[in-house]
Length: 121
Image (cartoon, rainbow, N blue to C red; front, side, top):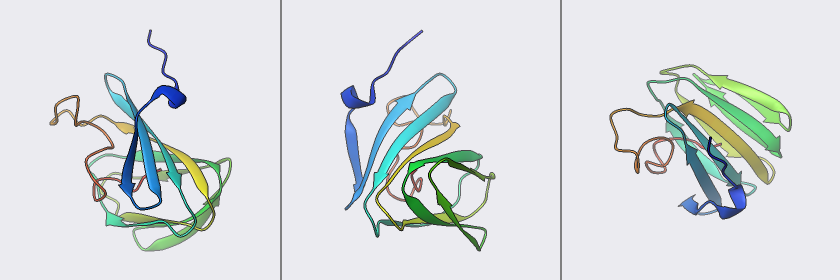
């Protein structure tokens, strides 16, 4: 059993006003994403499903062209191969949970590829 602490986990800047911390297990990756108001990631699509859990804040998310507003205590399921993007309407803190990518080495697996790999949570 391993314990992880967000305050001891390295933070990555995905793009201006969009920050992420990452914890990887054997099969799952969890990203803690913090977005300032107005932060936006362009549409993207992945071969695996993911869940986005909004802890605080408010976001506009489009999945396969359908826009929804999600806020604190809401969970969004993004199906595999669904094109999606996100825009923070307020300062937002979110978690994203998805399978680790077996095709990548452990230090590059999961949600940290680059700004185009994952919206964030």
